[in-house]
Amino acid sequence: MEGEPRLTSLSHGGGCGCKIAPGVLAEMLKGTAALPVPAELLVGIETSDDAAVYQLSDDIAVVATTDFFMPIVDDPHDFGRIAATNAISDVYAMGAGPIMALALVGMPVGVLSAATIARILEGGAAAAGAAGIPIAGGHSIDSVEAIYGLVALGVIHPAGVRTNRGARPDDVLVLGKPLGVGVLSAALKKGALDDAGYAAMIASTTQLNTPGPDLAGIEGVHAMTDVTGFGLAGHALEMARGSGCSIVIDWPAVALLPGVRQLAATGFVTGASARNWQGYGAEIRLQDLTAEDQALLTDPQTSGGLLVCCAPEALGAVMDCFARHGFDSAAVIGAVEAAGQAPRLTVSV
Image (cartoon, rainbow, N blue to C red; front, top):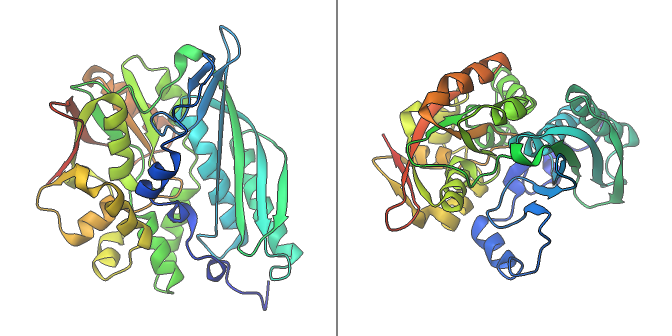
């Protein structure tokens, strides 16, 4: 609304770039893994997976996740759509279909008008509607910074769950979306993103990861996750650790959003990119990557693409699935190898 501040001016970090740095988060959570868990909890926090999975019966498991963040864009409707799409993605990443969501709303009520806040909620509802689910409730608070997101719930047959810990040696690695959302958001916040760049950013961050359930149904798909705040390197490394394998990324095969390499080379990178590298960079072997390549490798993605490990003979079906759902940038970006002495991530040119 006229006279109100830009949404991005109200947040110290936007989108999944708000995440607590991986090293700091690991320190916070290190004591919780020892807590007792019921046998019905099929997926918990053990390998930093995308959602929790709890088995209700022989045929049904519930998938539960939550995600919320501060504004990554200034348009309130777009902000709501991006935040909701990002939250629902974690259900798809487990191979499940979403069934409903709850809204998480924290807004500076004295700073933003009711009309602006309503537009954020309408954007979230639009994304949920595109996923075919209702927003069935939620919780709101008066907050210093604008915060929006969802609790997303899904269901799946227990045998159909795909986690980030199932990768096997000789698998191929497929990424569903191009990278660069964090770079584009940094340029937007500094007034340096053109209309074409903004359109590309919105198209990527509001594209629901609908291939997830179909991918999980393909024999030979062994592991899935989505690439979000820890960047491609961080989430690939989580997959390597959880699977007890090593992953090699063929960096030239990784698709980038238009213009992001040039923007990164001129300094439009997020602080989260550097924090990501500080958190896990010591575990990654780089081969001849430039400074901007490293920034893109760790660039925090908001509502990023699915990262899939599959057997070579399943690759055709995986690529057909991505194409059928409209993911034209999906590409093979690497391979899985035996771990040797310890799981690791190698990025080569």
